[in-house]
Length: 74
Image (tube, rainbow, N blue to C red; front, side, top):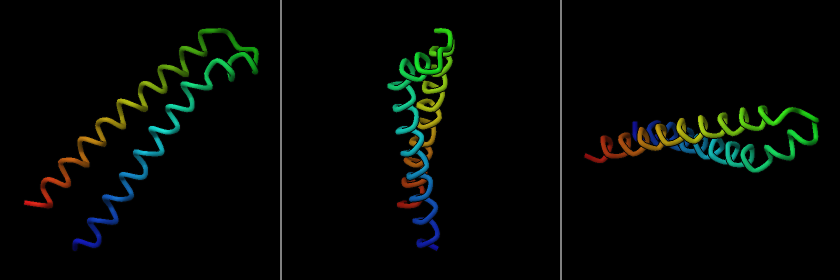
């Protein structure tokens, strides 16, 4: 049972890490993407809001991971 828990925990942690990395890259590259595609500045804000949503989602998942670990230990 512990092996399955560890696999699920690791999978969720990797997914959360990838979302954080993707959100950070999107926020950093937003001006380049918008300028390169010739879009209006409002689309840059849309990318920023998407990154913010990714970070909020990641924080919720980090909390869930923390709770999963606490429940499994005791």
